[in-house]
Amino acid sequence: MGISRLVAMEIFTNPADLDITIGQAREGDKFAIGIFRGPGHRGKPLLTSQPFAVTAEEAVESIRELLEGIRQVMTKEFEDDASVFSRYLNPDHRTVDESKVLSAELIARIVEKLKQDRSASTYAMLAQTG
Image 1 (cartoon, rainbow, N blue to C red):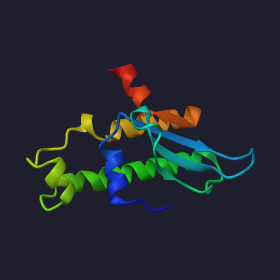
Image 2 (cartoon, rainbow, N blue to C red; image 1 turned 135 degrees about the horizontal axis):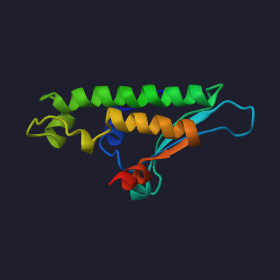
Image 3 (cartoon, helix red, strand yellow; image 1 turned 45 degrees about the horizontal axis):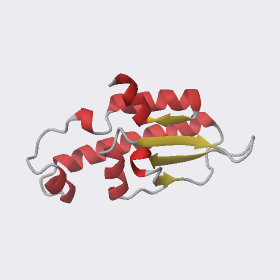
Image 4 (tube, one colour; image 1 turned 135 degrees about the vertical axis):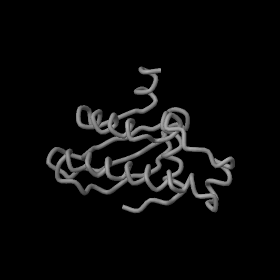
């Protein structure tokens, strides 16, 4: 499953407006994953997969790995003075503010929510904690 830098940046910089789901067409089928923007963008699809995971746990782990990879790569991108993203989104070359991007803490919360409900809405999660 490939992901463009632009989509990765959109996920990374919009931590309070994401909907992440795990689903299967029918009981016994493999699981697929989807990452969408939340109500702020009317559920715009950012990343969807074909069914690939035998278990829901495998799908959750794939999402965890994907989000962690996005966090690591985009943090470096933000801090790279030569990066196009950095020039426009971080022109003062400041340290990345974890409260404004996809953080390790938020990823952990998303994973726990996915394990429980097979869906996680960051806008709802963050609204509860202020």
